[in-house]
Length: 154
Image (cartoon, rainbow, N blue to C red; front, side):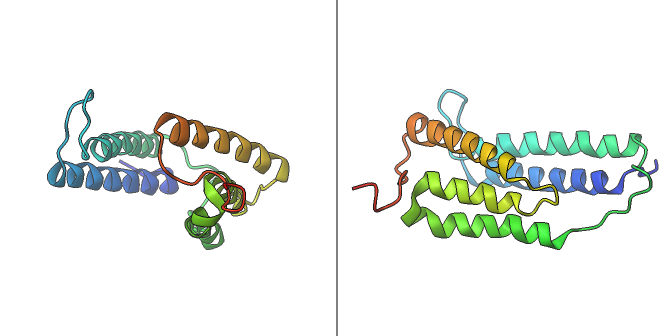
């Protein structure tokens, strides 16, 4: 079989590797539980299996599809730095800036890594992500993470 799209092929292989690692690690080191009463291993195992399945689909598509105009795979280290930097910004900002501001900062800094960055789209994605994160983690899961910045939370 011939690899027709190297970028998708290696992305799929990476997804499969990470997915299998987390599924096997979660299964070996944590109790799984049931879907009604989930154990600590439930989430990593299920997420790992889903990630490996997605990787398989991407990898198989790379074997079937024609390469886009012979484009060579090129790793954009600048984009990688922006995305990894966004996680660092989130981790540093969370204790004092709160969840909502930290999520907004994470989204904007990560999107700065794109060559197609537009402020209007970044603000839109920010608003959607802040609402989703607030609904899921604060209202739904009732996690004890500071939501607002320290100076507003009093």
